[in-house]
Length: 84
Image (cartoon, rainbow, N blue to C red):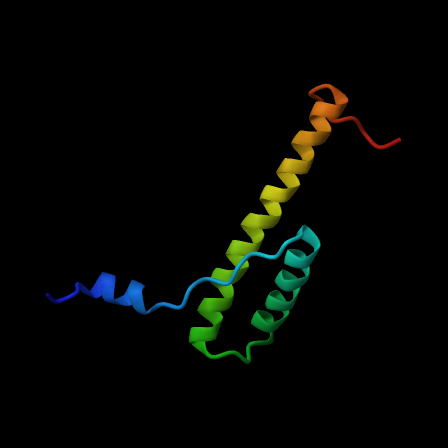
């Protein structure tokens, strides 16, 4: 049975790298990716891969920040208070 082009492409794609364990590690990797993307020295395929990884890392960082913000809201009674 022949595979459709979409399923053939998705089955040959390498698995996505695991997300870092911490916000700080994700941010460090994201900063390195941005630096290499901005250098303009990467081939097109690596640019796309780097952009996709960057989007994953950005979503992870945003999620972690939202989770911390929600925990602070619980501790502070549903509203964020300014740092004193």
